[in-house]
Amino acid sequence: MTKTVIDLFDRTGANKMAATHSVSLFEVFSNAAVSFGHSLHRIIEDYGRARAASALYEELSALNDEQLAEMGLERDHIARTVYQRVFDA
Image (cartoon, rainbow, N blue to C red; front, side, top):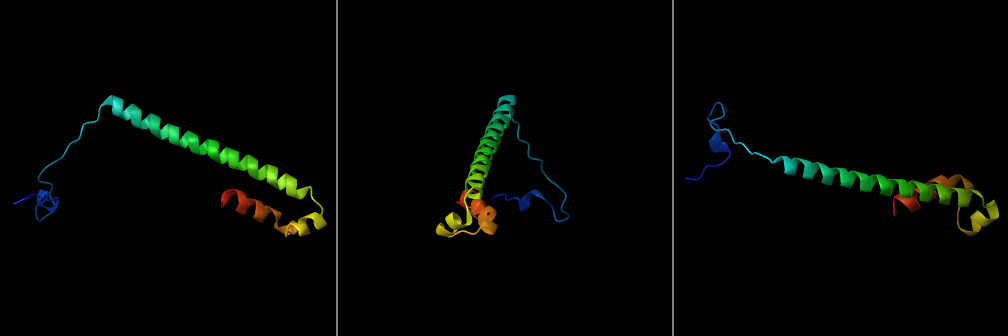
């Protein structure tokens, strides 16, 4: 009979066997470095998107209402349009 996870506990739920897993110090630091790298990468990407959104908002805000209308935009919709183009892309 094969042991399953359920077999490790008796009917009262008391643990019959404890499983241990040791991790080397290298693995701990390696995993931390990878996690930090992913976080840093995301921060840099978010910063780039924020700068792009700011530049696009400034560019569209500088246009007059006629120019915006030619692009199919209204001044009240600039912020939403910028968000959609930069963050929903």
